[in-house]
Image (tube, rainbow, N blue to C red; front, side, top):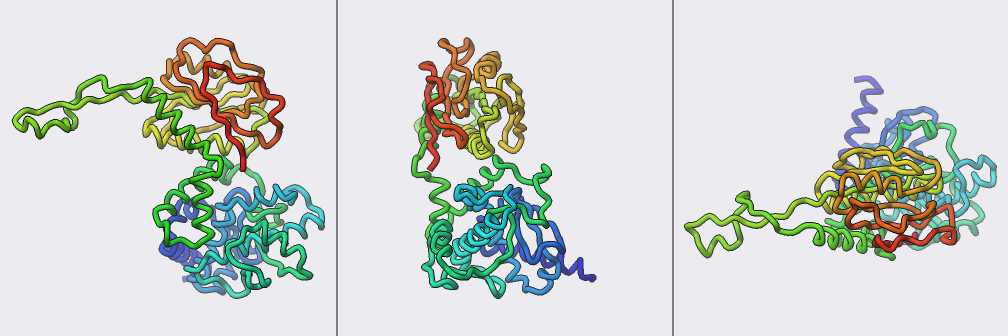
Length: 399
């Protein structure tokens, strides 16, 4: 067996060991694309969920330590360290020495946030923990970042733009082969759902992250689920008989086979605003919640993307099947009129609300309409026209 075969075998073995120690990470680990590269000093992830690893580094450490590296890099992506770095003014595009210095401190802070939760893993020598700098465990990276700025010396660590900061010289960049913002949100939700099944046995930081994903401070998702259930009740009912399963009253007359009542599955259309005012995070939120709609209904739905014109994505059963088109101005009414031709029972519109306007009358053919108004990361609320009275509106506020 040559060196490359040894490295490949260890990579596969380490991933399986990671899953054994933290099975809830499966959705993230299987989606990360592993790229062997001698340009990366050790290992690191970029913003598009590509994991770069140096073959010599893999050969030097144990399989147990490599499993810890896989878990560590997955958590950079799951915890959105790149997005959180941008919120602190650490830019992906800025190549200046000042931005690089801030990114270095942030990367150390992010490592501290992750590593004190990896108690079930063995990590390579030289990694940093909060205790490395005399700091307490179980803090957020933002807290560590603020405190580390006061330190006279911070250890340099190797990681990619997936942990925050500018593109590294060993990264491939945004070439379309990575994970989109929307798919990343779906992966995070899946990992959180799987982790929630192990509640009580999770590290403190993982437990907190899981609750934040599944139970946000402003629980607008509960409102959306409630609106969907209400609309389903309004539009469907137990209107037909079926012998597919017996009636609950069967025990009363054991010698007679009684049918049970069933209701039809509602016909649902989803419209996603793909105009220029919708950022990657906004579209990610819309796709993640479309995934939630699919889970709630457990059936296929019609999906449209729309800027000023509707683009039908077709019937989908998974958010991964959705291909968004658009990028121009914003007018949701053409998509609503197009959806009305199929006479859906429920229509859900995801938009930041910066539209040309809404018709006074609901398009004929639509029944219940739910507008999910996503707080834009690009604009303020002041430019939004009033929402129509014929739709239920759910406001999404970022926290």
